[in-house]
Length: 244
Image (tube, rainbow, N blue to C red; front, side, top):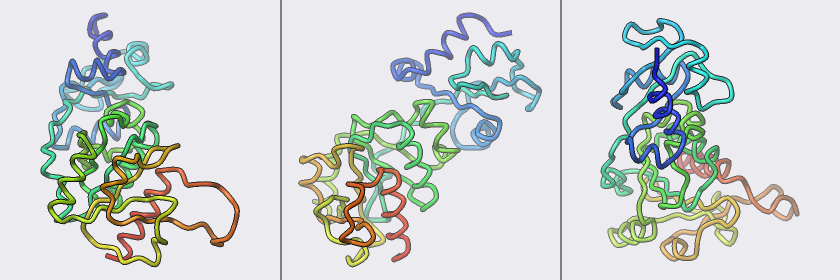
């Protein structure tokens, strides 16, 4: 049995304000919850409609539907502490780091986190106006990658400037950049991806040392103006890893 107050508290985690106040987020689905239970993240509470785990709290299907943040409720839900990561872990001197400038679509952010996990990129540094990585839609879209990829929020322009000063290469994807397939690429550095509609902001663009472009095929074809940011991230990361 779950109380009305508890239901309200869980439902409030759908909003960023509620997540900030409680320092927690919701994850749903048996597979994801099981992964979280075996991860370094702290699971505060596990609720399930069946005795999947010995320590899970059993709730009715109707109660699960009331606390679920999905259109169709799953059998399991977990309330998890929001981790507090040290930004210094995002070190482009030791490997590739993704940087996101104003990426605001939860689905895109979740997919990019999943891509980072696939391509072995442990840290993503986001501008403060990016979507919240603990938004329920983002968490579900990561397919568990949120457990393994550290997502940081900071003043992106200032952080990039500090990395440039330290000698890091900062790659940015831009329509006026050089063909990515013809440029030399490093196994270390920062890869900046921009907003869905406006690309990389002028202030962030000033910190980019290497401007890259993913060309269409054939190059002279007059087709779509640009790629979806998540798809572009996949293409760029794949090319960096192919070279490395």
